[in-house]
Length: 413
Image 1 (cartoon, rainbow, N blue to C red):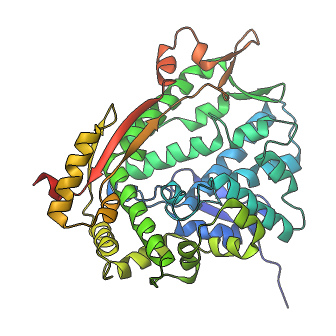
Image 2: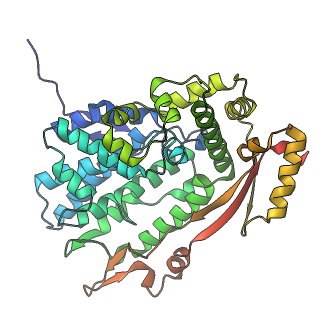
């Protein structure tokens, strides 16, 4: 006799405590292989090279974000903002699946394994596939995610300057890295949220919580997401994949899992995913383990570039990173190239894998296009950056760009 599976499960989360799975459909989505893959993709990629505790996954983050969304919707309902059961479940699914299109090592390899395909676009493709399997159960979820639903605040909760995604990842990343400066007080922010004319707003008394949120985000970027060692590890990993793709596409048969092999052999575009359903199946099974397994084998490969970079990553022998407020002069770059060629006997075409330069930006609050709006006691709606007594927020709306130069430490001996 077949017994019906009990789908009303409770998960124990280290950040929030007990989290309930509120519906059968949400349970079925969490159990799906596409979603379970997120257990095998770390939330912060290679950041554990700097903060050893940063081993939490995209699965953790997605479940936590769903929990915060449920608290937020319950809070809005308590303020007499009508939210139907269908809207409630669809919003939970939208935030649950917002990162399902992430590949291995998250953002680091979006432009190498794939051809500049934003993970949001792949999330939509995965949601569409799940919607087919669930017989249209995710149709409203897709409307909300694409910002096509007429009640815009649901999409703002999923993707905006003050969305549930950011509330969870700042709280979670701060917790697992031990960087206390990232603490944001998500509970108070959620209690201060309200809706007027289908627009997500923050009650005026919550303005200092928003200032703290933006300040914490800015600090987390410099201390965690853009930490020099993390940048070094990511650039080295990108160089490894670029080299592997070059070798594979010029006739060298590299060791790789079948799913990784697909993306080494092909330069896959978004159109390619839309035309070939098998590509999404392959991507839906690709995770961090495919890459680490390949690196262990590649570290013994006869190709010097591939083996050197793989071995250095496995042993955490990271490149030196020099940061500056202005682009490094071409003469400095060329001088390092010359020393690099002399020290490591590199061929000219191999140089680009060992000397990497570029820029990175930190924008805690970019008001253009998307704003965090305050609802004053007089029912006026104003941009948080325009609040007269908060010069810090205006300062944080400035984008800060730093330039990096990344190379082996042997050059400095």
